[in-house]
Image 1 (cartoon, rainbow, N blue to C red):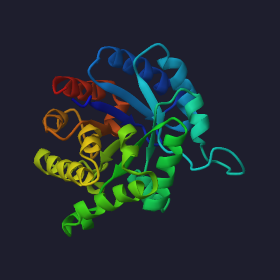
Image 2: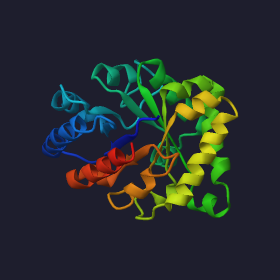
Image 3: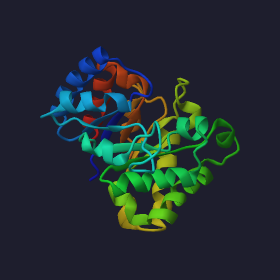
Length: 253
């Protein structure tokens, strides 16, 4: 049985005051969700605060990105070694905003995946298609290519200690959400593709849905057999909304 994950991605949001309030609240939420992994991926500048505020709780946390380098003359980057030193569990790699705004290719994302994993972090690999690709029927082709780049570099067993987040780009921040049937179909196809390399890995890897998932849509999405939780954007900045999504995961665990 795969343990669900509800993971917040705060993106470029937060202040000292809001981080304090949110982490205190979500630490308690995590303590009350023994059958769900609750996590927050925060802007790197706040990870030290998160470590302090979440101490002693079951709340896990991580970074929204990670560099391929561990140290050196790479101004402005965030080393996986440094992120791990602050007690982080996860590192998101390949988010559509990184792929789009920073021109990160599948190969760059795979290298970040490897750097995170090699240095003790659990990579959260984001995959998904644009609206044009969706309309052209290329969803599976795009997702498979983004997964294959990681397999080519790291091998299929790397997914034994990783999470996949399917995030249709056309549904991120737009208010649009893939219907539960559409999302389930894609999640199943992702798992079926992994099975062509290893049935064991495919059955064990947790695949999250990450396209405008909110308190209203989470219950039906999480009831699908191949959806193992959510990568949550805006709703993770609101205590009541994020707690409702955690409750939906608990109900389907």
